[in-house]
Length: 109
Picture 1 (cartoon, rainbow, N blue to C red):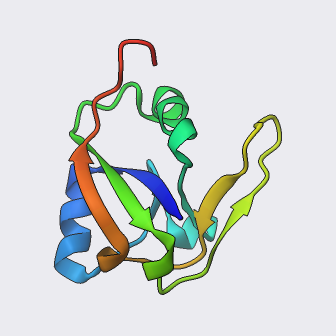
Picture 2: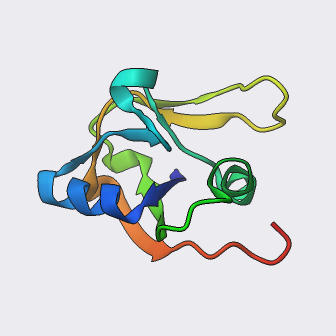
Picture 3: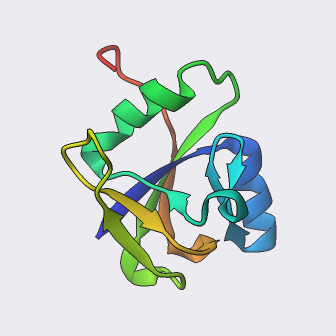
């Protein structure tokens, strides 16, 4: 399965140097939350609008192949959300990221 994560440019650069990514979401690390927040494709725009709309730093959209993860992951129901959200329950190994592109929100998001 392919899941997605919005990453600030500086955090992604640090992960590439270390080999693992541990940012859960803006201002929170894996150690703070217990997992890394991810999205299904249909959820990315909404996550950006809710949590990243005011960010001025470059944001990267990471495409993660769950078959390549070394940490466990699962789809978790979130109250008020129709689709479950994927969460990675450990560090994200950078070689599980199969694509990285600059995130550009559409005019409708």
